[in-house]
Amino acid sequence: MGINETQHDTQSADECNTTKLSLDIFQDIFKRIEPEVQIDTFESEQGSGRGDNYTAILYRIHLTGQRRCTVDGKKLKWEKNLICKRLPENVQRREAYKSDKLFRNEVEFYTTIMPELLKFQGSKTTQVFNAVPKVYIAQPDILVMEDLRIRGFEMPDRKKGLTVEETTLVLKQVAQFHALSLAYKYENPKQFEKLRMLTTEGLFCASNESWYKNYYERLTKNAIKMVSDVLPEDSKYLTAMKDFAESSSFFSRMVNLVSAESPLSAICHGDCWVNNFLYRYEINNDQLKVLEVCLVDFQLIRYSSIALDIANLLFCCTSKSTRDEHLRSFIKLYSSELFSWLEILCSTIPEHFNTPEKFEELFTKELKTYGRFALGLALDIIPISTCASEDAPDLYLNTHLTDETKLGAPELNFPPNDLCRQKMSEIVIDMVDGDML
Image (cartoon, rainbow, N blue to C red; front, side, top):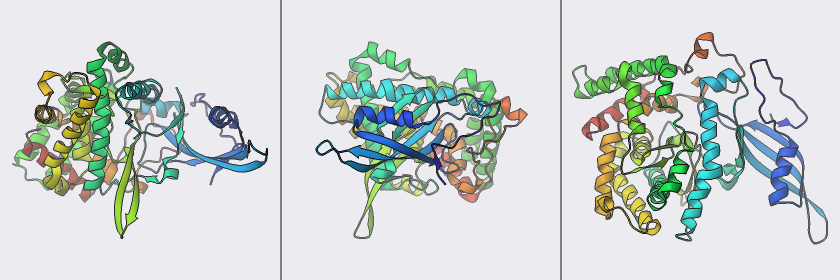
């Protein structure tokens, strides 16, 4: 059921004032890009499923109106579909999910960081990074962007993970994005520092440790239990898992991994998992072909080693069978793609990675050093990605949080399942065997 512009939501005492959706907002957007359009109505509906988004509220917006023909003045029917991303109005929910800080990151990304990187790219080549949605408004509490569904994009099945073709395509786009940031850092170090200062670590910073203490104690305990249900008690893999996830030091380990400075530190996506990759497909001779990918949700952008993004993508978004067969080629593909962009974007590539071989060697080293970060993310991602939508919390319900939750991070409890246990154990196995854990 849609909500039209004449309906109003009631606000409770614990809600704050956020920008209200109105015809004026949408009219203001389109009077600049399509001045001949008059918008008459809008309808909104929930824009993501349960388990798909936890820090902001998404709506799909359908606009209807009229376009005045510039030749004969006739009015023609006009329609447009948009995605609106908003801060939750409920103050408790915003605090529980640190939504304000994360939302500010994404606004800075769309208004300053990405435009500056694209301007830099435009000064070097006619090829343009376009694997992000078009954004119409980016304000402190609201983002209005294109609805990628209209161009045929859709989210892959988070329970199945990415196919080889989907992984290959997204690796190429992430490589280009990383190359833009790395090249800009080396070509314009002072300007890059200004961009870097716009990013705020939204999750793994020392100031968040007490807030997330109970949350990660539960997650690490649950993850260890899942792995011990699958692997023998005396297994080296289980031992490594226990050492890494030991609750009193886990959060500080994650803080150290995101804050470490490395030769390949750059502005990263920060949340490279299945739900943040939208794909466009076509069916050719009964075969599904992947044509294009778009990256979304830049709330967790961070300045860190690019290996953090890639470890997340490879270990949390693919199956073990895919990694067993293709991990080495994925790393080579990503390294090669990124280096080819550095050759285009940099006047001089730093000597310690100025050949494809040197770059791949350095990146592989960083993946071993920082790859365990993906296991830390898996504590969250794997339970979410393997649960059924009906088992995930519904954050669109305007329910009050408990007193306990007000004092710290929210409780996201997901029923255990065999797929979750299997995937978590396989990540541990691959990381131990790959000298990352």
